Length: 123
Image (cartoon, rainbow, N blue to C red):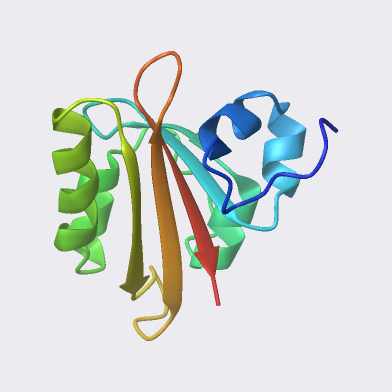
């Protein structure tokens, strides 16, 4: 492993891009890679488990998935930031796929090869 990944680090995206897929799946927080249209290109095992979605979401549009759990504002923040250029966004959110009362911290940063990394740390 390339050393511990710090969720609060200013270069979070750079840190996770240096990890293998297995290492990404082993992180204690959820990780997704979205293209600029919101299509999920990578969805970590941790994200699947902690969100309650419990399956791979690769190939699904996150913005459509958000509609199913009432998270249009959640996805709207990400889409708006991505449309404006390089992304470095952090926000708090209450409500997960299967738990509407769960508190989360969300970090979104531009990916070096396009799209954005979405990292979600849950209470």
